[in-house]
Every structure is written in structure tokens, then in C-alpha cells.
Length: 115
Image 1 (spheres, rainbow, N blue to C red):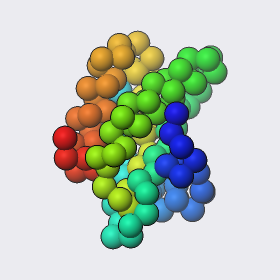
Image 2 (cartoon, rainbow, N blue to C red; image 1 turned 60 degrees about the vertical axis):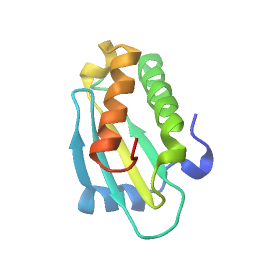
Image 3 (cartoon, rainbow, N blue to C red; image 1 turned 45 degrees about the vertical axis):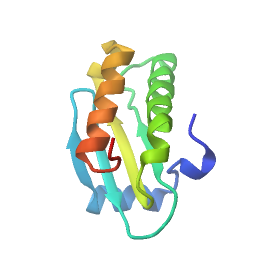
Image 4 (cartoon, rainbow, N blue to C red; image 1 turned 90 degrees about the horizontal axis):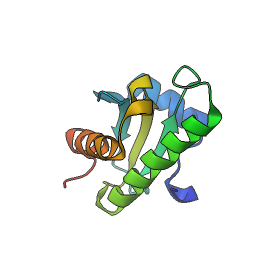
């Protein structure tokens, strides 16, 4: 699980990303992000609607999986990054390998990580 300093949780950050963020799309999620010149730690959030699954257990499992994949890439992430993963319904049936690959590709496409 991401540490407190790497979690995006303020409403103003979500509003900022919604207004000025850039979207990168994947079959399993959309990645809404912004990279600022500030040297803050990279911060991420995961939004999983009840439309994805009515079961909280399933939503929490997805959140933990995505969080673990992002945590692996955290040392490579650019400072000043703020990003939100907007999870789609197809992610429920996706394998761990497919999700990991999608996270890696989205972070590369967004130029949040270099590897």
C-alpha cells in the first residue's frame, strides 16, 4: 500500500486534475495526471466506482493491486507528479499480469516513469 506521503487525498487536488489534468487511457483504467515543477513527492489515488462492482471486497482488491504496482514504480516516478487512476469495469476480470502491464504502459505513456 502506498505510504501516506504518496497518497493523493485532498479535494482541491482532484478538482485541479479534473480541470487541468491530462488523460491517458488503458483498457482497464484512465490515468488523469499532472506533473508540476515543484519537488514534491509523487502522489497517486485510485477511484473505483460502484458501477465497476457492487462488492466492496472486489473494489478493495483492485485498489490494493493497483497500489502495489504503482508502489513498485515509485522510485522511478518524477517528483511533482499527481495522478488518479479511474478504474473501468473491465479491470475486475483482468489478470494481475495484464493489470501490471497496463500500469507500466500508462506510466510510460504519461512520461511519469522512464522505465
